[in-house]
Amino acid sequence: MSLPPWVSEQLPEDRRVNTKLTQQHVIETMYQSDRPFFSVQQIQQRLNPDVSKVTVRNRLDDLDERGIIATETLADSLTLYYINHPESEWPLSPEGKQALNRESAETRNPLREFFRHPRVHLIFREELLRSIAWAGLGLFGWAILITSSGQLPATVWTVVGLPILTWVSLTVGMIGIRLITGNDLQVQSREGLHLISISGAVLAGFWAVFLILVLDWAPLLTSGLYLSATITYFVVYKRVIFPRFDAPIEN
Image (cartoon, rainbow, N blue to C red; front, side, top):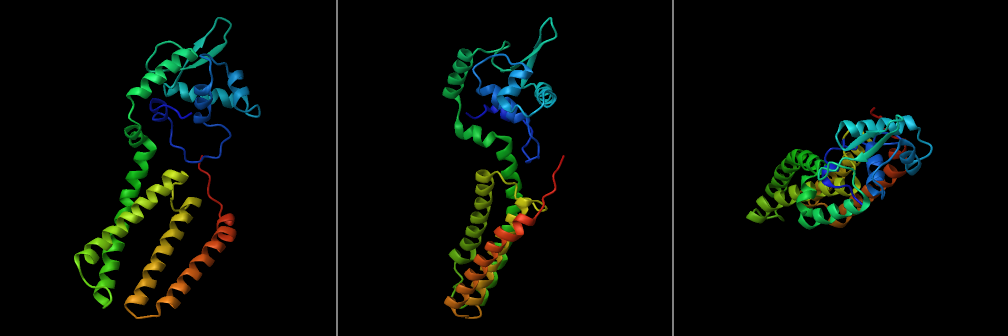
C-alpha cells in the first residue's frame, strides 16, 4: 500500500541515509495499520523491537513538525499519535480512512499524481539538465561521422534525426533507470559509478562506429573487439571495482 500524495510530498527526499529508522518507515506503519491511535511502544513493536523508543519518538516528533501526524496527551502524561488527515480534524477509524481512500481514488488521476511527486520532479529536472551533454554528444558526434564517411549520406534523417534519437534515447534511458532502481546516478557515489560506466560504453560505441564508417575498419572485427572489451569491463566492474568502492555516508 503506497502512501497518499499529501503524505509523500511532505516527506524528505530519500538519499539512502544509513539509518535504522526513517520517517517514511514510521508513517507507512501507521498508515497501513487498522487503528486510529498509537503509542510509542505500539509503533516500536510494529516496526522493529531492536529500535529504541527514543529513536521512534524522535521520528514521530519529526513527523509532527511536518504536520503529517498529530498528538493527543492524556492526563497521565501518556502521548498518543495519530495521522493528521487533511480531510478530517479528528483521528480516523479504519472505516473512515477506507471511506476517504475510496473517495480520493475515484477523483485522483494516477498519471497526474505521479508527475506531481517531488521525487519525479527532481529526477526530470536533473536529467533534463544532464541531457544538454547528450545533445552535444549527438550533434558533434554524428556531424563528424556524416562529414567523414561515404557510407553515411547527409540527409535530413541523418543530420537531424540521428542526433535527436541519440539525445532522446539517453535522456529517457537515464530517467527510466532512476525511476525503476531509485538510484541517484550522481558522481562521487556508488550510483555515480553506474553513470560513468554507461557513459564510457556509449563513447566507446561511438568510436567503434567511427572506425567502421570513417576509417573503413573491418565491421565484424571492430564490433567484436568493442563487445568483448565492454563485456570484460562490466564483469570486472561488477566483481572488483564496485564492491571495493566505499561511498561516503551523509549524515
